[in-house]
Length: 613
Image 1: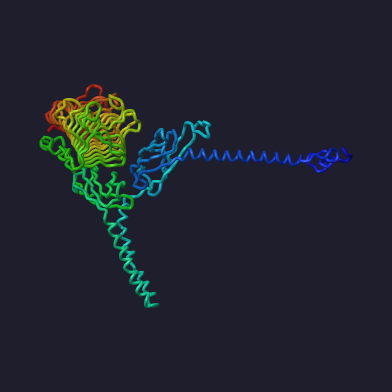
Image 2: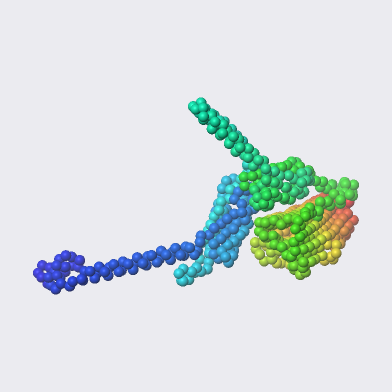
């Protein structure tokens, strides 16, 4: 090396020393630069590949979505939530971040789910967030590489709570008539500027008049009527409406009750509703769909409920039996329509009305799915085996004014054996079932055959059956109504049967104004917790009310009042229970009013006002 030269790489002194010590090598710097550019190019290609792979992954895994069948309604509205793209997840719904009272559901194989919830009755008016949170498990493919594990997925939607008082406000939309205040004909003030401008203003004045005239019809087309418009407390009336948006959800409110149906394509609907017991006086009924609403008034009178004192019992009770027999039960309003042949399915959210269905030997005549409606139809089912005239296989189903002729297993069946979600918010009213199968109406909540323990979770909720009649005079077995296992907050009122009611496995039941004529048991009562039995009648059965159950705690904290037993030898046959209340129950020719089978603890019961008539 030359004296004074440096050995630091990248230093001009080093380059100078090398050039002095060695002969020139043309192209060595150019080759180095080529190598650097080649490395840079490979890095660019790798980055582009990763970006493309990320885009492909996002495209292959679309974001989850959540949709609600209703986006506005009062507190306590029943809403169906549907989700998509959730993978294989267990999804929990939340209301404003809280899971209290909200359902959880297992997502199907296609990544979608559908479940029903009730908006909290205490929810404040205004928007609320409904969110679906899930943990997605399983594998996903990215560029041929298999990726597995778990990931959090969520989606949300908004439900706006409105007050009942604000619902009718859309009818105040005659305000557009005030826009017909083309007092903008004060635009005639420019008229003095030029004589010709007066003619344009004359041409402009008709236009506001034409736009203002359509406005009143839109606000006045919606109207509803009640038939009958005067009923007794606890009775049923049919609300009919016109002028609603076509094929849309219609909410009907009266008191604290709310009902849902779907309008026809031309905006009409017909829906039977129950007026709550202990209600009297004029009751305002409101029907609304979107921004359209209408109201009517139903006069509710207080029904005659027997509550005699023991001393006056013999004189006040000789003829109460006819008063307790619901005269309106089982008189459906059938209507002419198409003659359908073979098994039928009423798809989710749709309505089948009028005409007939002849199953022609099919196992099931009509299958009902989520939020579907069936009315005015006469059904013939001659199938055998585990079949039915109607099978309910979804939530929010509404069946009214139908006649069923059935030789299959059950006239109407709601069955969710082993399904923890069960069936919720189903309504059956004013139907007639002529049946020689197993049961006229069968609600089976769980797969237990011996009833439902009070601690077991309910799988059937808010089932309402009213003014329906079961005729089984050609059958010696089965029940008229079998309401069995795992049921919560159900309502059975003003029904009639010529075979026994089996009512087993209930919490919060209201059993009101029913009548049974049967030879052995009138009502089988089992695993009954926190319920109300009022004004029910048993005629001719050897035992009016026969308790069954699993343990001494099976039948507890239930009130039996104003019930009557006509004929037979035993009024209440008590077993497997304690801490119940018996008030003003009447007995006609029954030898024993209360018989304890030995495994019933009556020490904490309250029994008052029992009487003979």
